[in-house]
Length: 316
Image 1: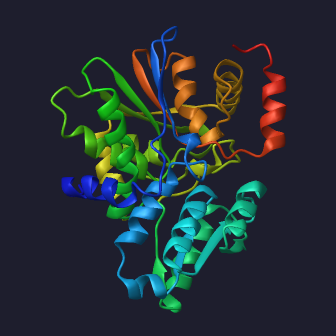
Image 2: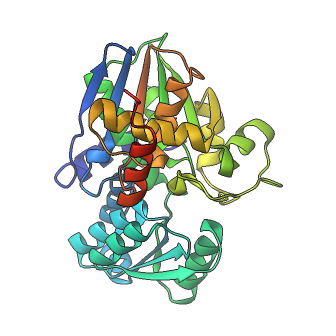
């Protein structure tokens, strides 16, 4: 568990640089929606990266920042690096979404593409940081990153006081967002259920939560690219998620695509697959309302989004 005061410190530290995103209500579905796709970089990941970088010593910043990312954390770290004049190197899979790679480079980061999936990029990044005495900034396995992500939970709790009988639904990959929001809920007298969701195509945290292992888990292509890949074996998030979450559920690629189109046609909001997993479990009634859904980002390849919305044009 991270110290509770880290959450409040993170909120103060990052407040000048992030947006307090909207929380809206869909009365027809009896759900609330936290639109983190409207964040500065199009994703919640800015919060954790920024909190980590601003908490570093000056010499740690000056050494240069290194991470592995599918795109959203990398954009957050690149922006944070710009704020403190620190060079940023990001390792990404050669299968990473093109628009996300371009966005990281547009923010001034050096992006190195690695053959294989996210875990290959992460291994290469950790090795590079150690060999070159640079500062490693994990996308999830770091207390200050988790605290930064938890600021979403602080905002929600201020706008919608947590209550028993409601379910908070959160996308989960490495677990930083779920752990951070879970840490916020430990403060609450009336605690809602906390449910994580990820794609069945890359169900590593789901397997860790339910089976205590990541072995023999397929890592297939998925619209939820930001949630994909194996998790560091010693990650802080693993015990936190096991302690704080009530369940972790899976959704199919078709269910993710349906949720992407639903968000566009009903709310006129662009969300990526990694956010759509949370909405998908409500639309498929794997979770019943009342519920709060964290829509974690909107950085989807434009042509992919257009094709999905056309395919499901009847969805409202």
